[in-house]
Amino acid sequence: MRPLLVLLARGNLVMALSMAAATWLAQVLAGLPAEPLPPFIAFLVIYSIYSLDRVTELDADSRTHPERARFSQRHAGLIRGSALAAYALALGLAGRRGAWCVAVTLLPLAALLVYSFPFLPRAVAHRVGFSRLKEVFVLKNVWVAGTLAATPVLLAGVFHGAVRNGKPLVATGAFLLGRWAVNVILFDVRDEAGDRANGLRTIPVVLGRARTLRLLHGINVLLVLLALAVPLLGLASPRFALLGVSSLYAWVYLRRVERTEDIHFLCDVVSDGELLVLAGVVLLVTWLPGL
Image (cartoon, rainbow, N blue to C red; front, side, top):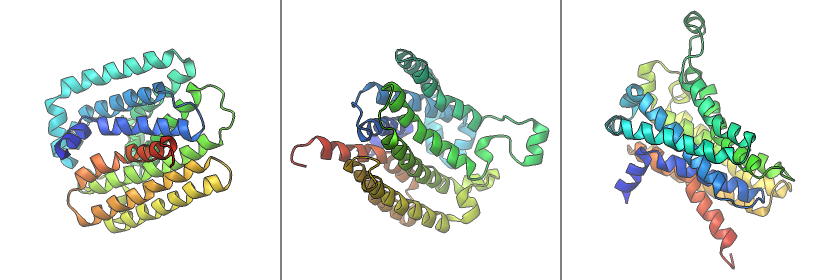
């Protein structure tokens, strides 16, 4: 099972499935019909974006994750072709639901372009110390987490048209923002040595590994409080509290990160697959009779 999970992660399928799960959760928690098309579009988009990023950033990836870089380089043609085909299919499906759905589908691509490619003139970049958004301390984490949180929530909203009560969607977006923040900062923990060598200022580079992990535990506590507070305040149904299960899940893998060298598996499979587990819990409690 472990080799299969690693293969799925290196093929960017774990992350894509997690985004599909997040989109399904956004629909269910907002009381919307659990349509399969929005999660499928999210799956295609994130598979495409992450695959294109892997084959574009092979040099950087070879320093922080050499096994994945070798996999991406060996299958670069297949990865690039399937990624472009996936995005084309996603746009075609989104186009059937109107211009706003297409716009949301294009959001992750626009975010990737701003994040990964230089957008400042060389003279200005030399003066401010960065040319790409991924080089900006903290903002890089907010940008990625914000994109990953906004995409499923907006997809769920625009797909279903006018939503009577947008509060559950906003609450879900806030929760996903925190959940993805833990994820992307944890990846910076994994990549700390490579980021130091490349001169990138990330949270672990600035704060150190131990303090960064304490920060992640703190965010994790805030997220379980949010999961409990939202239904108590009447902003969403009681099932929203089930999201607190993810904090227990995250606590377990964060403790493992503190004690093990197997951080690639913990990041690529366990952390990236977190929302799949959470969606399974919500599905179990929501649909099984007697629970």
